[in-house]
Picture (cartoon, rainbow, N blue to C red):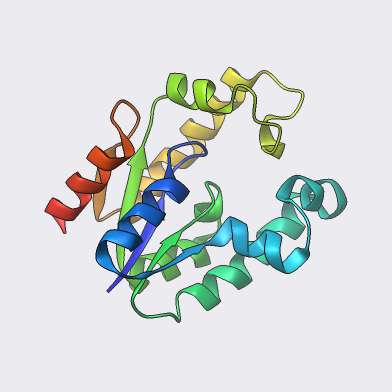
Length: 165
C-alpha cells in the first residue's frame, strides 16, 4: 500500500502522515524533509539561493524516488502539485489523500513560523488566499479521498482516513 498526502501548507500533512504510517506499520517519507536532508539546508535557504524553480527540481527528484517505495506513506509539499508531471505521478502511485484546511487555520498555524518562504515579508492572509485559489483545483483533481483537517485533532483525522481506506 502506498498513500500520498497532499494539501496546502500547515494542513498537517507531515504530522498526520507520520501518525498514519505508524498506525499502518508503513514507512514514512516527507518530501520536504528529504529535500532538506539532501541539500543539507532548510527549504527557505534553497529558495533564497536557487529560487522556487531550483526547489521544485529538487522536490520532483525526491518524489520520483519516494514513489518507487512500496508500503509507504508519503507526505508532500504544498506546491508539489503545480507540476503536471508530479500530479500524474502522484495519481498513479497510490491512494491520494487531500487534507483540506481553512485559511484561518493556516494563519494560526503559521503565525510564528519563519520557515515558510512563500509567506516571508508578505500579507500572509492574501498570499494564502491566492495559493488556495491556484492550488485547490489541482488538489481536487488528483484526490481519491478529501478530509477536512483543520478543526479536529490529528488523531481524529487519522481515524477518519483509516475508516475510508
